[in-house]
Length: 312
Ligand code: NAP
Ligand code: GLV
Image (tube, rainbow, N blue to C red; front, top):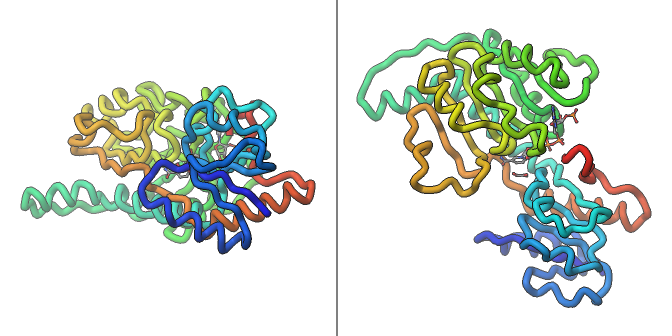
């Protein structure tokens, strides 16, 4: 029998038990704090932002499954043993959700939707004429599981697509690839709408700052759906206020939730969503965890294990 130690401190978490029971008949699904004793036998943790020190108290945990694609909410805990596998979520539900959100927000920026909504509130019949999609250069920062899913969703609309990653990628029709620090500036210089889909690592922290964002074309816009640490928000606001950038959609923040008195909420060129670009969906995630536990128990390497040296 498989034992799952579940940790999620959010309303609505009751949906997870039935999803695991359907995917893993006979599963022992233990919702924190009812994790039992560390001597109870092998278990797998499935967690989002577990309390500091908690995982290390259970040496019977064979692997920690992140409830999301990101793992910063787990690796913030230095007491987690260095040899304990941490496995990232990469299920179809997460990819579909991100593709939908990015498609929606790219279209919003392309079609001036935030300005249209402001105009409506002001009863202002303001007609704006967008470029054809083929003349809009979308750049995806981070071309992993989610970046690829977003590119696939955007391609049929004809956008001029590019992607930036750490390592080089094979040539691909309809996408211009950029890789590594040396090609970062060229990527920025050709990008009208930037989609941030990078993990939070020391290398990606503060990558979008006043110097780098200033390299983007005038009136470019930023959509950040990876992690909040990517963007220096003071620099972003300065570039929006001086008119260099035209708008931003921010779904993720270095400190979450964003404080109610944060002035970003009222910035007319910023759209804020509360880290919901893609929510892990119980059905597809439970199937993904089941499959991966099957691999571990068959003595195979699980998929999407965090590479601690890379940070993702
Ligand atoms: P992934 O498959 O690991 O892809 C990460 C991409 O980032 C890869 O293309 C990687 O390059 C690139 N990268 C990492 N470090 C880099 C660096 N220093 N320079 C250049 N490129 C770098 O991850 P994923 O599944 O697509 O998820 C991406 C992130 O999205 C997650 O880490 C999470 O933070 C975020 N996320 C947010 C939400 C939300 O609701 N807002 C939902 C899910 C995920 P290589 O290809 O060369 O390795
Ligand atoms: C969400 O932010 C995730 O990492 O999946």
